[in-house]
Length: 392
Image 1 (cartoon, rainbow, N blue to C red):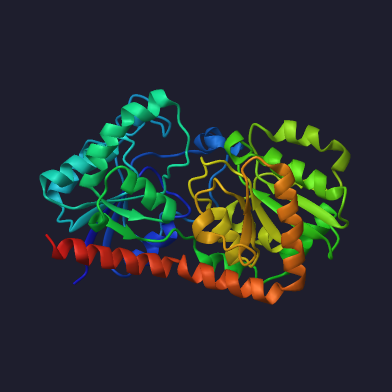
Image 2: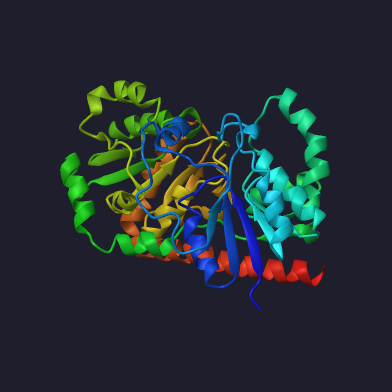
């Protein structure tokens, strides 16, 4: 018997849509969206440019837009998603369970309360972790609230640090289910089968075919710490030959970053924001990804993307996925947050590994990403539902 699962999300997100399509073939799902994020909203979210994703986000699964009655609809405030009709929908529909992605919007709370009234189990999926630093005036008052509320939900934790976070707030082991974080591995791996686009990227940027290229992908905002990446590259240029760097993204820090590298514009290349269908080719045009973010990077799905395209990653030890995705000198390496000198050393060491053991690294990347996949996440979700519903 197919389980009927309701799903609540703020807006269509490119990472989750492939999962919804996959789930639609295995259970009866309906996805409810609370907020229509437009091109201006994407720019305000830190992307730095107005755009819409170049992939269909509403096809292949059942979805419904909820009426957001917030005075100022936004994703930047608890009150920005107010969808009282979700209560009537939960009352009317016969859901076996309900999945939410976070609980920090009024609409999420409306759905949770409606499910509790109907004795429908609520599963939450998130990736928060304890390394995220907040001022005491925020963290101290929230502790008793989180300790009271989070244990009442079932949790689909995505990795080691996320599990530690939930246990810190008193969630019992029996309410924790590992459902790995993932991207659409097939989309990225298939997209790089054609080598011509990545060759063209190097040619257009003036990068030699035999150069070793480090890649940064992300918004140019403070938590991503792109300046650490650039400073590490500048150190490498003084000791290593035929090294280049590509930065894909945009944001408020772009101009200061470009000013910083004026004398190295032939080696550090700003490729601006790129949409989803272009991204695999930038990974394929590079040799290693660098993610220097602080703990605000609660996972770092660009690491999954890089692995799917066959390149390893160097991440700061504050990045959420570090203990799960990075096996030192196999799938990449870690470095102390903010230490550009240490980052440069890791970059140099990883280059040696990539050039001397390319087949071994590719095998390790494929093995890791096969575990963090849509298929594994779907099976884990199905198993969790059966356990939860069997216990009533």
